Amino acid sequence: MDALAAVGGAPWNGTDAFQEALCTYVGDLRASGLGPVDALLAVKAALRDIPPSLLERSVTWSIEAYYCAA
Image (cartoon, rainbow, N blue to C red; front, side, top):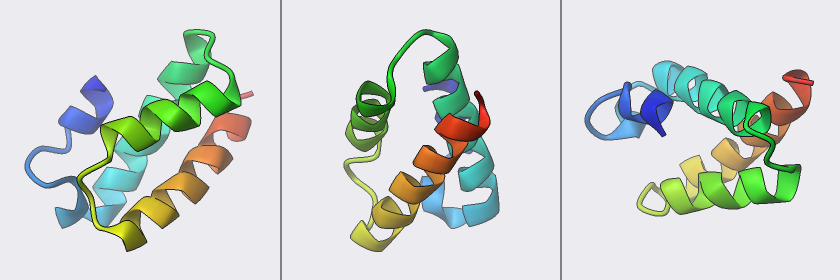
């Protein structure tokens, strides 16, 4: 979660910075041993207050980041 907190303020203010932080967060989740479903659930829980359209993109970015970290 530190990676997402590093974006500061509302995470969607700088979408590029947000996407980078999200990918780092997902990589950290994978490195800690979480499987893809649990990692995605953690992302959704962490991002429960963002606009639905950004949440949808975040899910896609998270899946891509999880498997790119392999």
